[in-house]
Amino acid sequence: MDLKSQWQGKFIPPLGELKGKVLVCPLNWGLGHATRCVPIIRGLLARDCEVVVAADGYPLAFLKQAFPAIRFIELPSYSIRYSKSNSQILAMAVSLPRLMAGIVREHLWLKSLIKNETFDYIISDNRFGLWHPEVHSIYITHQMMIKMPRGLKFLENTVWKIHQRVITKYNQCWIPDLAADGGLTHDLAHRYPLPVNARFIGALSRFDQLTTVEPDTSYQILVLVSGIEPQRTLFEQAMIRTFTSSSEKVLILTGQPSYQPSTLHKGNITLRSHLEDDKLAATILGAEKIISRSGYSTIMDLYALGCLHKAEFIPTPGQTEQEYLATVHP
Image (cartoon, one colour):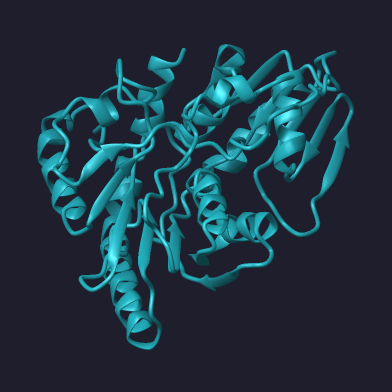
């Protein structure tokens, strides 16, 4: 399939005059923050920048596979674990002190790093504490507002104002969405006025450099598993139960990248830990149906490949952002 005509400049990160040494720091909240950093890192390398990535967990493993020649620093993310229930209010309330401590800790880590090493730019994908007054700092987020759960809707405006204070610590805020007609995020990035340092940069997709892909029709159903534990595992188990007695050929990608990808066959179901981007794009294009969480990076990737119409989104229970995105991309 010829994809070149689909890009139309929508998947080129606005790197502008960025040059020199750049620290890129994706949040470990599933794989999405790491995957959408791929076109940014690729663009920086094309500009002969020296790129250093600070990450942990699966995002670290994923980016090491994608860019084996660059330098990596292990930087722990916030210690967050979801509940098994359909509400995450209690889990997030319990995690809030650890979240705040994690923000302070990463900010102190960055200060210490800058004392010993010089960077020209910092790019933080949704990590609140990775700004520095002496280094041009860029914050990436698609959630200018944060959807609150039922019963706490009255706090949305207050939480939005708090988030604006975080954003103003940075020199720039990049919003990976289209500016017109509500884009792909709708309320999340378009409901409230933007701070003066924020701008839409278009969608970001790791598939931005694929110009020709031959669809792989080996599987009728593709399931993309992702997210924070234990909900990631619960989703995987639910999909196995759903398709165990099906006659359709099903591929479940468990979202666990490693240097030794695993494959397991259970009747008509194939479980793989990970696929390289070109093979994943081919499988997405060839599948009749795609089932996944309604994570925003997944939505951008499916949009990039022209496959949003094939998606059935099952949001992580209690994750308000995904629950909202599932309603605007039914």
